[in-house]
Length: 242
Image 1 (cartoon, rainbow, N blue to C red):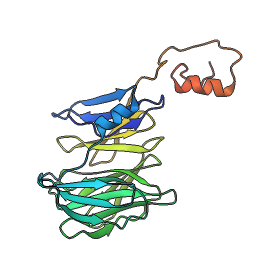
Image 2 (spheres, helix red, strand yellow):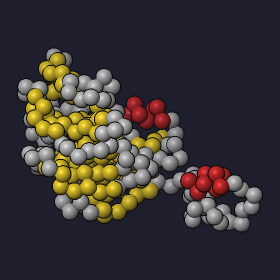
Image 3 (cartoon, rainbow, N blue to C red):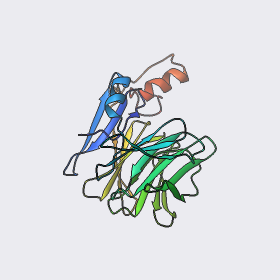
Image 4 (cartoon, rainbow, N blue to C red):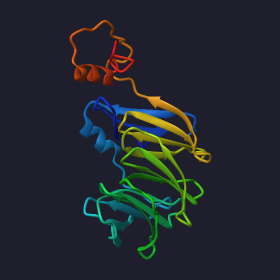
């Protein structure tokens, strides 16, 4: 079972999520040793037809290899900043890549047979941190460093919808096995479940914080910063003003 990418919770613990095979359950993964979890969560995307591997690096390039013998097929080099995410289309023909810097994000579509960039998805003000295809291969969903999600039409590059989903960067997106639901995982410590077709939020899942439901009351002598810290850890339920 794969983990759909690491995300940092509000308490500093890295988390991940994966749909159960039947699609009705989402599993959480978390670890006290972040580096260990990152190693377990890292995936090199492969085509649905296991022939090619796509690798993205900090050097603004994407490299495609033949999985059978390691032959390098293409080097894609048109990103102007770090490439943060790549995703194959369901039929393995196209590759979506996302990245960008502080001033603007980048979301590209590539023809993997010849290495040509065939589309640029315009209107992405923040760095793209996650991208996923729907099961039909006609739409993409991207998540960015500001916590927003965008639905895109693959053929035209048109933005179909935008949702302000999270309070932190989106680190992973995962489609349910039946193709109906989308899970987004963020550094704000939440996983949100969306109706993929209507783009509406279905539910929000929270991982318990270290002091969740202690409901500390009657505290005195705490500074605003100390109260804010206790609130972030779950000790308070209302802005740390108990």
